[in-house]
Image (cartoon, rainbow, N blue to C red; front, side, top):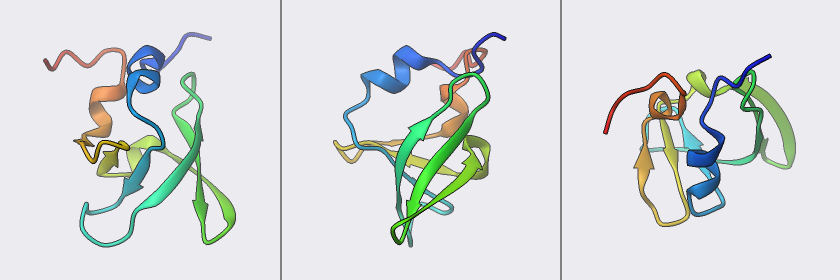
Length: 79
């Protein structure tokens, strides 16, 4: 099985990562991301929840830079 997500890009971001559905209200800490499937685990009030990176609108790194999750895919060609 080949990778779906760009591991080098994800690992180059200042950690920890956070995800949000709208970029305004709730931000959930990312525990880990499976680059082959796009599945990720987030910490929701102390419990792990599994979902897909495409379920989120925004990913924020520790430098407070917000990323579009679509740019994490290997086939993405945005600058």
